[in-house]
Length: 61
Image 1 (cartoon, rainbow, N blue to C red):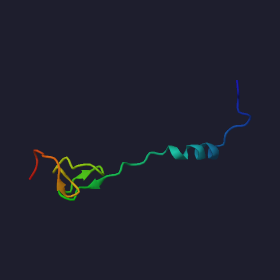
Image 2: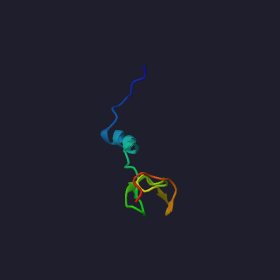
Image 3: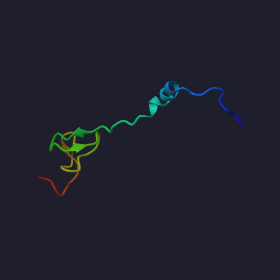
Image 4: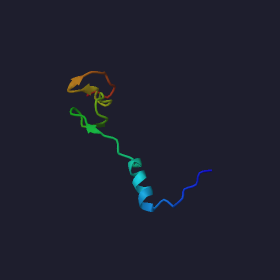
């Protein structure tokens, strides 16, 4: 079985794992109602996308 000749240092181990960090999901606010939504999607609260009404919602004001 292959065994490392020398112990991997803390620095080298942490450098290898530097790309494993989690990143927060991007969110934007709806221009019509101000709700927090994912980008490039219709707003589930008011049903608008890029300033136009695209879907009907029960909460439409």
